[in-house]
Amino acid sequence: MTDEVERVLMFSFWGSYLKKDYMEVGLDVTEILMRHWGKVRRLEGVAFDYDEGLEDLDSIDEVRKEVLGDRDRYGLYKVTFFNPSVSEEIYVNRLSVNRSLLLLYEYDGLKYFQTEDVKLNEQRTQAFLDVFTDVAGHPALEELWMLDFDWNGFMGKPAYLYRPEPLYERVEDTLYTTDMKADVSRLVEEFEAHVPREWVIDYLQDRLGAESVQEMEDGKIRVLFYDRELTKNKVGNTRKFLRAFERHVDEYLLQKGIRLYKGRGNNGRRN
Picture 1: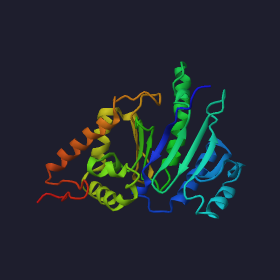
Picture 2: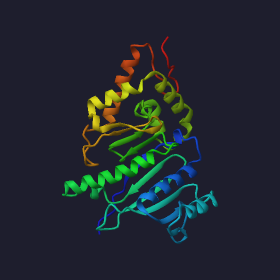
Picture 3: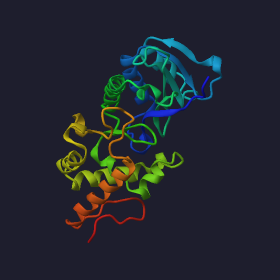
Picture 4: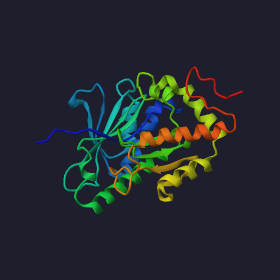
């Protein structure tokens, strides 16, 4: 038996921006996943003993009642599903909900997206994209990313593609994520005030192709950094791509005499 290779399929640093109760929003995400994947195979709080979790819950009402009826024990909760896009084996996907992060794990090293059958990989990628898009469409979610390490997809407000290191190295450290809410809010407001949405879309489409960038509802955009298969990153390194995007945004705004806020100690607009 091979060791589990844990990967994160989707994630959001929602502690840095979420305006609603994270437990409630996590339950909304659970409901979305149930529509795609069926019943909850296991529901548990982080400190539960193995025999304390509830299994085979068919109704989101049952899940809501359990979690909201014992908030202390479900302050960090996990919801396990069997993803039906894989039929030959049980493919476990587990949603993890806490104050700082929303995470969806898998435990097979992404092998089901990297088979020798390219068409199958593409079908599973599309099935996952459909789920990802539904989750990211929740009004409370302002950013959602695909794949830890790779960052192969994004859906949310365009401002969250602009990730200056002084601010986001703290956002991405869960010790500080929730402390950065005011700073993130200020940056998002300034970005939206000074960087036209059309400029962002044109920039991305010029480099990724029109098919990889789509306008969504609620002012969000969806950006795919992969080429047909989930694990095939077509920009080489998304982090480097985003750093280049940051530089180009800065250059664009410099022509207007504007510098965006990048964290505490940055004075924002140029005089």
